[in-house]
Image 1 (cartoon, helix red, strand yellow):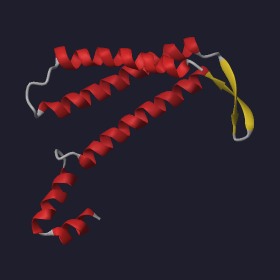
Image 2: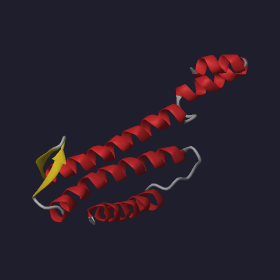
Image 3: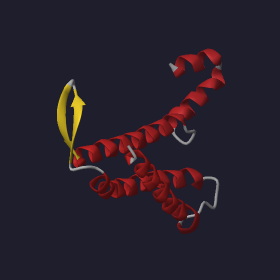
Length: 129
């Protein structure tokens, strides 16, 4: 029951290391650099968590566990748990990057919608659809 807490604690340590990178090794000097720094932090955090979670899973989880899957008991290994966690980690990272692409003014989709507002509200609604 404490395994999720171990994951969170590992994440805190990894975030402290990555924030050191953002503040000391590659600090933000201009407003234009903020987005790049955040992307680097997100990517670096995901990579370091992927690396740190493997030994954590091997240490904190039993070699095999019995879990109900589709109504039947199945044997699950530490590696399966690790890959499930990593899939969620990278899936969230991918969702974040895709969301940023479609909502950030730095990319074409948002600029196109903003440009469509110059001709009127109806054009903006149609273009947004």
